[in-house]
Length: 82
Image 1 (cartoon, one colour):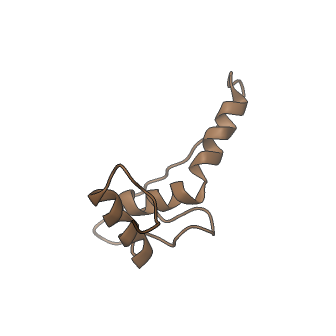
Image 2 (cartoon, rainbow, N blue to C red; image 1 turned 90 degrees about the horizontal axis):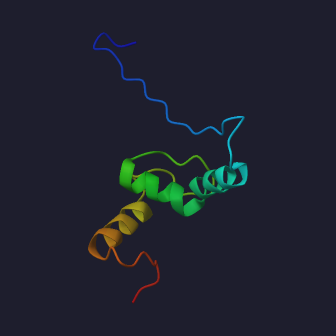
């Protein structure tokens, strides 16, 4: 550990054993693991994607273009030129 210290951060999701809606819980987790959600996390929060088919981190050019497009046109997240 550096002499300045370190910041530890862990983020995760769980489904409790007695969850009343397990199907809904799995649907939520599946949505969070979608390629588009992972790329949005990378762009908006700087997280690296968990899934291998998503853009690799917020520093990629594609992620930056998508981020700029969302900021300039928040009502449209299409990647097709208009």
